[in-house]
Length: 436
Ligand code: AMP
Image 1 (cartoon, rainbow, N blue to C red):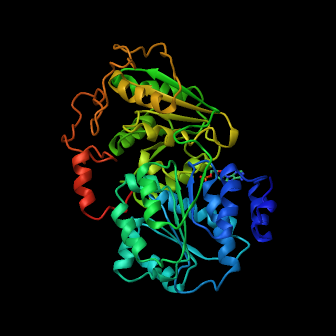
Image 2 (image 1 turned 45 degrees about the horizontal axis):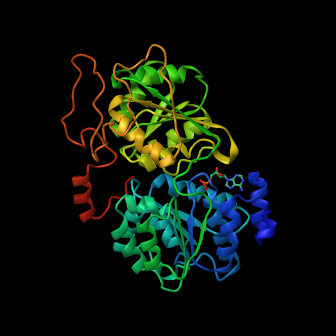
């Protein structure tokens, strides 16, 4: 199958050729004709499947062929859960639309509103926004959504996970009823179906990846280790190929920062990316990683959404995620487009229940191998009697150097990216934060 046969305009085909895309990915082949026809689309596709182009290409084609461009009212709105994903979608739209005269801008928190307001005043065709900051603009009346013809909800499952449902409802209420709605989600979980039922008009469904599966080209390794020895084991694994670009996942922001300091002390070039970092710091860390200036990027789950790095050979889970689905998202960074990938998890015996959940979700066994010199003092049990993960429960901390400061025992002091359940509920009652 070729991009030509999907009915895309020559200006888009040229841009795709320049990107080096030889043929459409399965989600693009399935989604593009449906979107070009103008119908609503409900698509199950994970990051790494080419989903961004699956909505961006027909969206650009629609905007370039129908109606006037550069009006004061945006004609298309793309909602994303995180700033990184918004920036990534924006970059992709610019790449694919480079031979068209379609303007776009991002609207997200963590940066001042002024330049965003100016861009909106100048007039823009496509707005790519995170829900929280978009609501701020709606309240300030700096955006008029009454001209939106196409709405894209990207990673809708994650937006719901992050408590954005009330914000989404407010935004949807401000949009014209007559519009095309495209919803992309990693899974068709019941809340996604409910959202689709409420806000979409007879959507066509396409699903290219069965829910919660990872690329078959990824091999999974688990190294059991005592929590106190994880840092050294990480160094050991990283040292096996110190030039290799490695993405390391940490469950907490505080943990990510500590790890980076430790790696730097050991002479590695590393940076952290998480919700407490300024937007500039996050953008810099990502571009340093992409350019190879740093070799290790330590990320939290939420900040890692939207990170697009081609052909990452290895992802390391320094902590296992509290939610098994996040393992799938993490691993989606490696083994892309048929390339081989490796997922290495450093697992302490307290995380045995989390590992069991991940195995259950993946429906596949994961090889467990001890690393000589790092054998754990407790066996890693993943049978039915393994300790169950408790929502909001944190890992025991690592051994600290003598006399080091111990932060207060509350979630914020540790910089947990996922608030404990109680906190999360309280937060949801307020407006969800735009920050990722
Ligand atoms: P996404 O799932 O949108 O995050 O895309 C994952 C990666 O696949 C990005 O690096 C895209 O640039 C790349 N990509 C998207 N479509 C294609 C294609 N048809 N051929 C090759 N690479 C692609």
